[in-house]
Length: 293
Image (cartoon, rainbow, N blue to C red; front, side):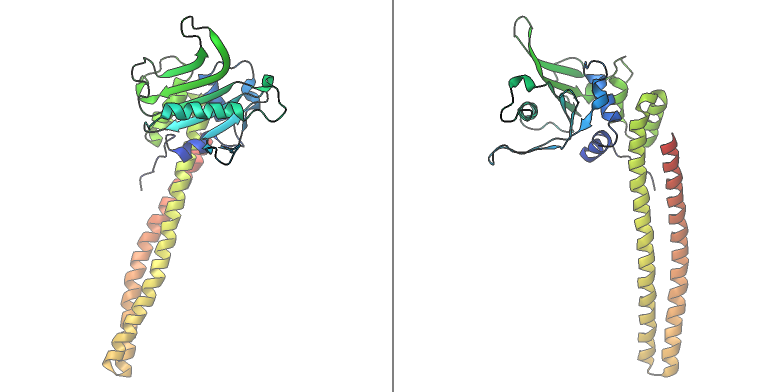
């Protein structure tokens, strides 16, 4: 069985890799490559609940892909989007506004508000008229470009516009992981750029763990099929013996049915069992190798 590779462009994989509460280093690596954050800001990164609750019953429920914050109060939303959907601009603005409003509670002063960042990694040309593939938007004055506030930040990444070769940016090696289509391609990329090794190892482990589970399920199914066919051949033997109407015929039919069925099924079972066991062991070795890479 050829190993299935799970891409970072899949929602649940993206959340698994970058939204792990026990290990924020991969998300910190992504954010650090995209945002001008000072000092060790990301050393206190914490994964938050991805559900932003309604303030009122009529409010729209927001479910983020990845929600995080730092000790200083900065908040981050990271989204992955495969296809362009209607009003995607509006959705990002709404998410960003909710990240701001969620910071204040009754009695809080407005100086409690900290910068919010909404990052969208798109597998389509979201802004086709703009050159480049990484775009950062802030709230600025239209003519002079003077910054009004640093509280509102949206970052758009357009993966299809990425150059095939490294352009020297900090983000390129990390974003290239989203473009890998096979485990072999991802491993080669990790060898060339060791800082993404942790991301690639997580991808490979997830893929291989799924494959081992799949192979084990097939192993269990083969065992159940074997038991089913054993009972089936037993029933056939008894039925043929019954038709003869003689004890000798019944016994002979039963024995022949059992013998033939058992022989055929034993041969089939042994072959499948050997193949499945070999596959599981190969996948386990590959998983151990990926973990130790």
